[in-house]
Length: 180
Image 1 (cartoon, rainbow, N blue to C red):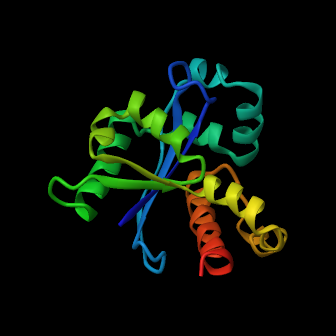
Image 2 (cartoon, one colour):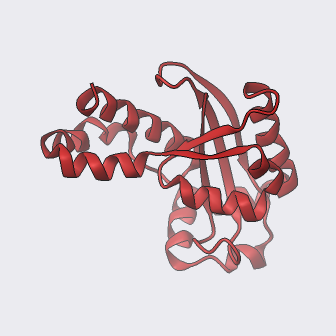
């Protein structure tokens, strides 16, 4: 299976910034079936939230994620445990889980720094939808123009579960229209 992950963070520096929210789904390799996994908002106190960069502050204030993080009672350790349990349920034994998502290398970087037990269960292989998007725009410009309209209902909202679902929908689109 593919393990679709999206993280929302206070910024893009994994050594300074923190994870606010995580969502994970699992799918088969054909993208036909999905299994819902954890959707978790992680608690952070006001001093941490005040350290967000301006872009993150605007996005997360608008979506309500900043306030949800402030009110959450879920620790980073509990969030990691929930994600790890989901992976272990759907990828049993010693197999390494293949991570998927949009710009998922950035998520993987944060997992490596902040969730090392989860990182230990993940493969070095990833499926990055943003790479597929980049290639599709270069190789199939007609399909790329149509993609904007087709995917507008699944816009990235910078909420983790919405963005995971959008990534799956986008990869389905590229598969259907470019990789037959």
